[in-house]
Image (cartoon, rainbow, N blue to C red; front, top):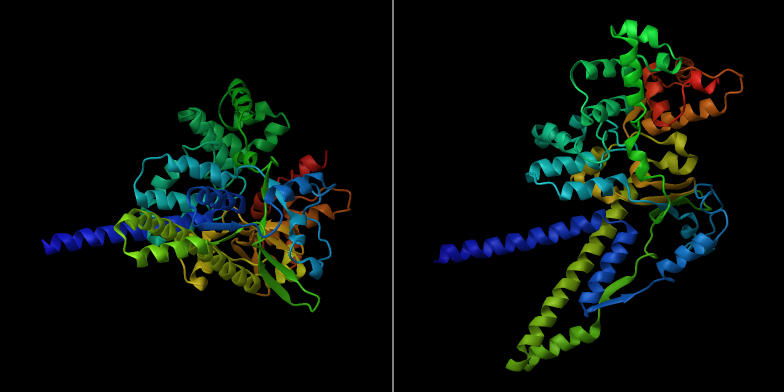
Length: 458
């Protein structure tokens, strides 16, 4: 009897802990606007919560932002930072966004009936996709070793999701996934794969007969596959970041002060202050003292509401602490980026950050999810400050994103009159101490959505 009672109590305690943990994880992952909605909903159900706006309402800021001229087009411009207006000037950099790819995929995952370990692996993979819907590194490097056995199952789930073609390493692999999704198989799929990987340049030049000969098929099939190719999209994730109808508010600010030092701020102005209403806590205290049996129901009601309110406050405090830890780590590890700009971004993975902070990699991913950081160089998704690294000739650890910025700058500043080939860009990078093979340059250029030298020369 006692053993059964002990098991029952343990089960209830475990359920309570798990429920609180899930709620905290959800709060960590929530964006500012999602969190405002959550606080509003909780306040409507719980009279014990006292909600006070710290600033004019979020909608006031939104209306003012829409009415202001030029802000939507120039949100990434670097402007002087006014220390006297430090409480509100971050709102000048607010950018708008549509439903993110991550949010879209997470909704679908929530409706999928799979075991918890596969779900965890799928969540990690989803939060590791870039804006195109592609992985920045191999899924085996993304997933913790204990979930390697769930890699294939998790990838299979991703490859059934909308939009078709996400969960690939690059746009070519994405096109193959889309073709499979649309029923292409066997010999046709094999020819289509060869066309995508080896013959696109020839296809652009209209060399149908030459391609057909090389792929050992007839011209009619090449034309049919070419028409089919035009129905696919090389960057399936981009449709979830091109519309501008929601507001992305930076939750972390790291800027250089007048003394040259970096200062970290956690932006709280867009969220209301949440606390227990003292009137209700005093009422609960009086009810406990009275000992009146008629007051037991009221006492139980207030006790439940106070516990619920304390849980929410605890979640919000945990979220702020997590943002502070992540902000401090980024200020330390990406110091040169904050001082000198995007070309100085260093390689930093979420796994490395998790080890330094002392949390799980998935927790770092949740903290960074759907959140933005305000810098002297513009507003950036926090996730963009994480990427794999490339080693320079002097042993410096340079971010892949920084190398992409260098490629973009080389192309934009080319005044020779002749479009630079990927090999030439590779050579220029080598002169600057960066080793990046032609194929790597080609991959990064395509991720930047920059045409080949052949197309740029037209």
